[in-house]
Image: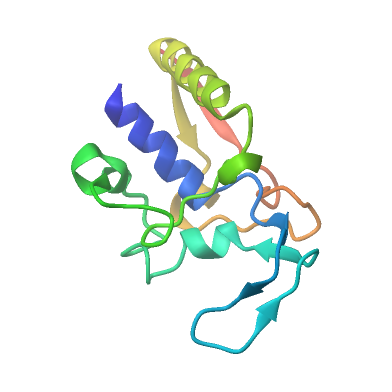
Length: 150
């Protein structure tokens, strides 16, 4: 079950549902090492998609490597040295985080017991292209799967 969790975490790292998070600054904040101040009330945009695909934090960020999230590789990791924000973070994170992950695990196990899934050829050979007109991360042209009964 832990490998399934790592696969889900890696999928959400590569493809966060909401690629951009918004927050409001609750008090004046001086950016370290600068004389810039973010004033209270300023809307902050956090580029979750970009942070989770940054080579500074993830080696080979475009590759699907679930082992990044196994127990051994997670020791000492935090938002500063490995940003991971598919459900937001802090007091305003997604209230459905645990339920969403549990539903995903149950759904995957039930489906994979009875069916095999194959991507269409177009997606097997190319990196996914996203629809620029949709706020939520959504593949351009959708995802077509071939579903084969076991």
